[in-house]
Image 1 (tube, one colour):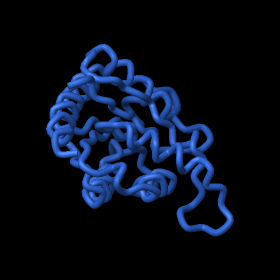
Image 2 (cartoon, one colour; image 1 turned 180 degrees about the horizontal axis):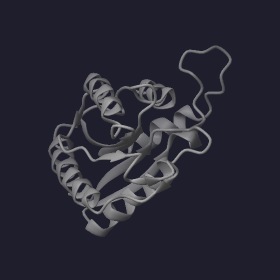
Image 3 (cartoon, rainbow, N blue to C red; image 1 turned 90 degrees about the horizontal axis):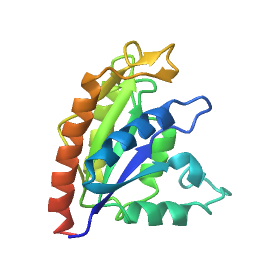
Length: 180
């Protein structure tokens, strides 16, 4: 079996977002493992209009489909907005169906309570898309893992949590690969 492709999906598109910092950190940790090909996938790069909205520029949709289809598993970088995921992430998930099916996912969340409520909302959506989310869930606090809410400085314990989550993502991605 060739190395798995694991996409690290940045779940925010807003100005001033910190998800690129978190995604780069997860990728750095993941690349040290050497067990898969890890790629940061920024939904902002695809400029997806609201699904079903008339007159929207859907030129990025084909590329979005292609990059997601090429992955064997995912790590979602999820920030909590009003007790849920961002509208941009929900829209990006809704754009596709089969490209998500029978793949595994881990969630790294952040927010005032570690992004836990957003992660729980995401789990329900992933289930509907036939994505198996893993149990280990690194939850980053805006109060202890960020300075001034903008500069990412994770506590050392978070590295272990990310590696445990990646262990599960790799195991489940290999298993689900056999049924795709």
